[in-house]
Image (cartoon, rainbow, N blue to C red):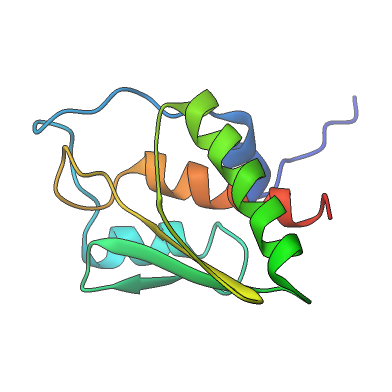
Length: 120
């Protein structure tokens, strides 16, 4: 019987963000770095508790369209990044405010946000 193993990123893409609280476990140190390897390149961990990535676009309109798609995704997942839009670039900052740091939800949203870039 043939079975295909899903890539670590594909596993995250199949998941949904779960409701969080102040009791939700935070991923720190090595655990956060292991999760970082599961999402597309370009993301970095900042101050040990945020995922950050900057995207480049040809113009404001393309960046704005990406922001619109990420916003729709955030509403669907009930997990909302900080979004910064400027001419030709968008920066996403993702972290779980309720937990005070990184959770699996952040990596799920990062993987799904990167998928939105392909819809240009």
